[in-house]
Image 1 (cartoon, rainbow, N blue to C red):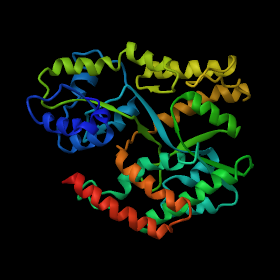
Image 2: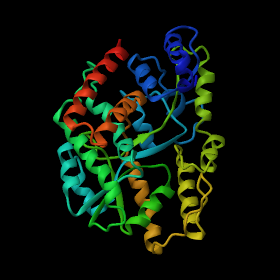
Image 3: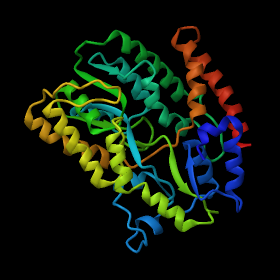
Image 4: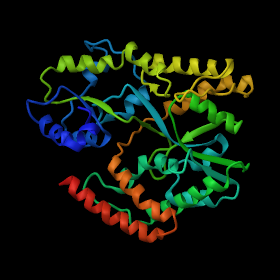
Length: 361
């Protein structure tokens, strides 16, 4: 079930209904929002016993420990993806310590700091990165209440407006500190960021998210239905996603997806590092990168820095695309100066209250 493609024809509703019956598909390919719904309904089979434990009947490759941890709920892993990426805030090591366990009020201080410029990878990129925490921070999964009219969200909007202004005004400047909200899809992404800073950098998480680490994310997830008729076959298929055939495929796509198995994750680092030194590499759109200008001792140290960033990332948030689209829609007049932050928070609060109520119902 490719839920995104079927949503317009009622496919997702049919899948929700069939998963609770004997007609349930064995293997489910789920969008983050549908995955979250099925997790709450306890409709997904645990994968640990069949795939990851020592007494497993299936010889699955070693999945990165932090990725498995990020995809674990109540002590059990119930879904996987064959690749992942990280999302968070990148800055210098020395400056990152000031951003550990920071709050929404700290965002405004960040925006007003004359020694710091905050950037993204495009006009909507800052919200694209921040949005992974928005749903979980301002929508309660317990009682489905929403708090977009709170002081914290108002602070976020004020910061976001400042951030978009800075994207246009501060390009090419050389502030003391640079903060970049973005995603890391490969080691080559990290190499390009390191070229910009010319100094050791790290990646931290989102404000008020109870973690100082970036998030582990994927666009779609695979799971086994609790009502699967052929569970052995379903486990075998999910295990195949971790096999060398699939993991090596994600290393050759050229779009920077990070394999979830330890062996191919290390291969990615080795290949990307070698390419950056020997002549650059061709990106997904056919353009070539420049050869690295970093000192050899810095390049040699970067793989371990990158491993450390990845290894401390053991949290994921399942983003609802409709939530993000709705917020983005209401942000446009605010960014254009046609609505105040207060008006925008009230509009988003009202629209989101209706949306969450209808969805929960």
